[in-house]
Image (cartoon, rainbow, N blue to C red; front, side, top):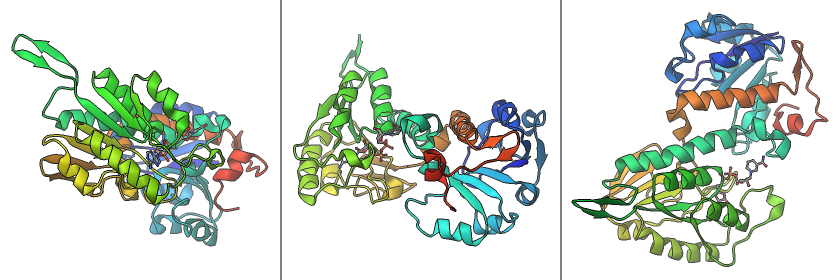
Length: 357
Ligand code: NAD
């Protein structure tokens, strides 16, 4: 059975790094990879050749039984696949309900890496967590490098500098990593989240958890946040405004799965912030947590830099690719054995991720 690895079109990552190829081969797979697929993740074609053949995009698409990539292939690419080819990618099917019928209509089979159930058993396959963790880390580094100030406290012969204040909205996977990174750099950190369950985690990382009473926090949502009432969001925005006006950096990560991100930082709040301060909005692609965010753009409003970037994982492509590949390998071990596919829909993880049943 042939496994084909595609080169990403607008992304620096690659689905499988060379050091993991041997493990994919152990599943009984013959591997081909598109030319230059790993180049931007610092993986040269020569590093793949011991375990794979390097070929053109068309060859990968036309000759593979399984095709893997990070971002969903275009319709033109999908049209080149043979019937019944299995495509494993992130299709964003939780936002776009037309994706699954389209793939089925093309007589393809598909797994969405981004809809693998987020259960304990599937933790080693969870690409959302792997990528969010990198994004949280990079968000702090990005903000720190744009900030015209130190993050740690400094006592020098020329004078003392107070530690920077970082405000983090949303303490999911990205937010927790942002807290840890900002703390390691010596900043003081305050955090908002609607899920009370994260309070202890936030505190154990040395940050202050700010509570706004009356948040809806439903355990039935599988660990995810639920949409809040407008009345709650208004109270939260007022609290956030107060903290943001004193902060040097605001990192926003608040998301409600499958919906538009809540606006937590209004234009009025940004206008109260200190000149030179930086907002990094990781929720930019779902509308942003800051009213002024422009997705994939960096703007300056009243001296405040606002970075709209939900794609920070691809700015650390080597480790992001390594983790994605590991997640993929752990997932594929569930249904590829000795070069044969066995898609058992009784298995909860396989069923949850299978788009074309
Ligand atoms: P996410 O990206 O959907 O959301 C980020 C954070 O924003 C969440 O913590 C959410 O509570 C918060 N948020 C939403 N609305 C908000 C508001 N109005 N104000 C402040 N914060 C708000 O979440 P995620 O990081 O992908 O995952 C969330 C949680 O899911 C994790 O922290 C974890 O508990 C759970 N999870 C479990 C597993 C597992 O068991 N395998 C894996 C991954 C995640």
